[in-house]
Each structure stands twice: as structure tokens, then as C-alpha cells.
Length: 561
Image 1 (tube, rainbow, N blue to C red):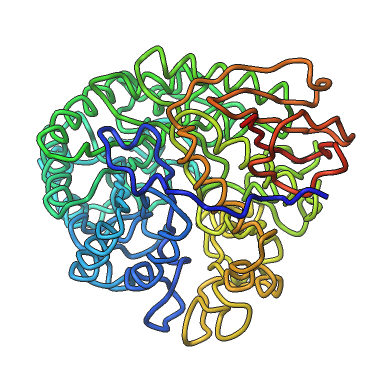
Image 2 (cartoon, rainbow, N blue to C red):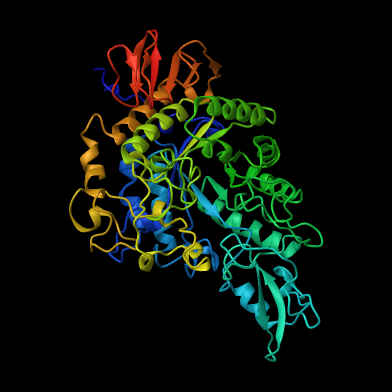
């Protein structure tokens, strides 16, 4: 049998300085409340991040994207921001942030901050002022307040539904106690949408950007980057029941992908260019095609956009080749790199998602009663192979905390322990995102598997975390952690992020995906039948190889040197 990984680790991409670092970077997403808890309250924090920066340096990543840590009532795990220029006490202080940033930079790791411009918390000072003010006031003009329809305004202004379920409008009670206007919230009722036609809103976010840039952050991941501008007149719209809740399946949605958002990001691009160090903007924009998404990364707008078309592609060689071709063509046409991503805090972890049956192909929230339950061994093998393919592609790659440990989706979370607003707003009909947000394991024993010194954990951790903990995997050459370390190091050594890609045919049937990138040939077998292993020295493989064969659900990098 051939070893799954090479034993030699080489120089990491993080140690190679250069302009436009974001074009080829490997970026690691930290969901702070589930990464590492230093205080013992069962919720991860910034000091916990700092304590594990050495582990991330060892992994070889170039940058960290931090999900929201700003002051928030935590109705949506921090994506409901009450103060954009402060740290929530759950996560620490601004001094803790500065210490983390300095330590990360000392290790050549950049920091990307999550920014939530579509909406604020209802506890934000501006929204509280709006509730106290009269219709038509300056305070209400910062948000999407509208009069209702019907004889006495008793009906919402239109028929829009919230992403989290239920109506997207909530009626307020005016100061005199009478039923009043309605406000728009594309997400939870506690997340009122800003009105981005208002110059005061635009100037406030310029101030927020400068606050964090002046502290030294390297960029921003922009939440709901396709949602800031709504269509004139707020027309009724009924989405397809089969469509994605964030709009990725349909065109001409009146609250997603409106042309006016591009003016906002051109303005931000100019602002970031005032700062040294190639500060970057990355869009979370769920759009129907790679070509539409590429509009967000034209030369004078954002620098990156998440490639959700790739994330949503199944473990199928033909489909993967098509989406890679289309992505590279679309982004190259505007001079931008493609990004590649398989997991994040909003989707089922790919170690489970890639093994879901056709009954549940996307797996947008799975629980114990969901159809098409994944087979863990199949999911892990496909996840390792899929990552082996992804990290060989040209452009930038995003990793989600815990995927380097092969963590699956946690399916059996009791209803009483769930936290996601989607679970509550749909009365348990949709499981939501808790399964990918369970705190990660650092040690195979001890309190909360090393996540918290107290043994507390804001979501329950499964018993299998003991076998997947980082300390168990660190010294195991065949572990998923070792695979990731080798992939990232060899990706840097061979300069794969900046290479061109050339498809290779004739190495097998329809289940084989193969391409050349620089000095490497990458081959993935997405089927269930072994194929002949092409000639060459194995640089890294996602799993054990047969005697001259590449088994199903396995990928390999080969070189002729």
C-alpha cells in the first residue's frame, strides 16, 4: 500500500510575502463561539483564538476570517450587531482583539473581520432611536420603515418572507400606543434592514471600515453582500419553494443582487486602497451563476467572492469539471481569482454533505429525522478527496474550522439544546445550522474535549469528538489533520494557487477528474470502482492507494520529478 501523505512539509504560503496575497491565500474561518473558550463560560472567545495561533501557524494557513465578535445580544450568534466598533463581552475586549491581531501578524497570519452591513440588531442605538421617533423622521429613514397596506395599514407592505421563516415585516407600536409602521427584516425580527439609499448609512459604514482598518485588520468578509439594495417600490415576490433561501437559484429577486450594490463596493474599494498592505474585501453573495457572482469582483469593486456554485456541486467528476471551468472563465474575465470553499458556518459540513443521498442532496440543515442520512466513512473519504482536489485549484481557498479534523455534521442535537433562529421560527420544521457550529475538540479527554476549561459547551458535543480531537491526530501520519498540513504545504511549494489548469482525459471513465497544474497531475476517482494509477511519484493522496490503483472516493497528486 502507498502512504496517503508525503512525510516532508515545506515552506508555507503564509511565510511568502507578496502583493495581492488574497489571490492565492488559504484562509481559515474561525467561528469564535465554537473555536476555543479561555474563560470557562462555554463560549469561545478571542483569547482562545490567540492561544491556538501556533496551531494554525502549524497548519500553514495564510489568513483567518473571524465570524462576528462585535457587541451583540446574540439573537443570531453575533450576526445581529448592536455596536460595530466594540467587542462583545462574551468574546473579550478591544485589548484582547488587538493582542490577537498583533500575535497573528507576528506569525505572518492576516486577519479578516466579518462585517454585517445589511442589517443591525434591534438593540442598536439607531434602531432604538427609530422606534422612539415618528414616521418620516431622520431616525426612521436609516431603516426600511414603511406604511402597511389595507384599510388601516394592518397588512404588511408586501408579501416577502424572511430567510429564517415567517414574514419579513414586523409592525411597531407607536409612542401613543397605536399600531404603526412596519419595518423590514430579511432575517430575524431582531435584525432590521438598513436603508442603503440613505447617505447617512453609507457614511456610518465608512466610519466603521476605517475603525477596523486603523487597528490593522487585513480585510473584511461582507455578510449578505448581495442584499443591501432593494428594488424600487418593493414589489411582491414569491420565491420558488425549491430555491435557496439566500437567493442563489433565481434571478431578478427584488431583495437580492440589485445593481445598486455595486456603487457601495466601488466606494469601499477606494477607501481600502488608501491603506497599505493590500486590504481585501470578500463577498458573501448567493447568486444564480458564477458569471453573476463575478460582477462583485470587477477591478474597482471587491477582491474576492465566495464560489457557492462550487460548494453546492456534488461529488461527481463531470459536474465538478463543469463548475471549475465556468468559475475560472467567469472570474478571469474580470481579472479576479476564483475562490474555492466546501464548508462554512451556514451549511452542512462536507464530511457529511457529500455522502447525503439523492433524497437530501443539499442538506440545508439535517437532523435525526432527515431523509438520506450520510454514511460517516463514505462522507469522510469523499471529504478528504474533495479537499485534495480543491487545494490544487488556482485561486484562493477557504477552510472552515474543524474540517481539518474531518468533523462531520452533528445530527443528533436535542431540540431543547438547539440555538439557531431557523429552528424556532419554523417550529422545528427546519433544523438550521447548529450541526456545523458545535464547538471543536482539541483533546481526546478532559473538559469539553479541550474546548473549555470548565467542561461547558454552548452546544452539546458528541462522544465521537474524542476520536477526532486534534491531539490524537497531530502525531498520526494518516490523520485528516496530517493530510491538510501536507496539502497546504505542498500547495505552497508547487505554487498551485497561481498556476494554470489543463484538463487531462483518458485516465478513466466518467467518474475520473484529472488535470495538470504546473509540475503536478491531480487525479480524483469519484466513482466506486478502482482505476489504474497513472505513472509518477505520489506527492500526496487523500487515502490509501491500491497496488497500482486509485480506489473510489480517493484523490492523488503526482509528479514526474
